[in-house]
Image (cartoon, rainbow, N blue to C red):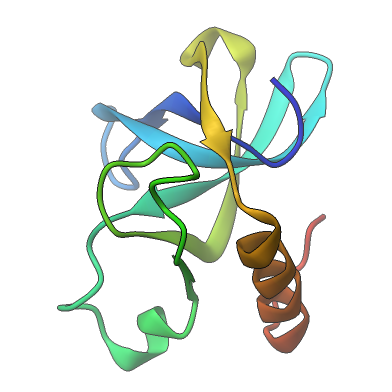
Length: 112
């Protein structure tokens, strides 16, 4: 597992101790701490504000995903490696990665 991989993670819900196994986009790996962004298939019913924080993965099949998906850049999360299945689904294509870097530079997203 390395930066910019798409893997499966055990991600907690915001207001609950429940969790969901879901694909995530790895931002950084520092020892056992992993910083990531959630990947979602839910887009259409979100507010315009939230939609502006979602990056569309155009080449989602090539990235290892089976449905149209978006990277949620609203908030970065951190978990330790025991909450991850070490199963890499894939990576963004070069086209999507370049679009993603441009998208981040056009938003107020901070990688720290």
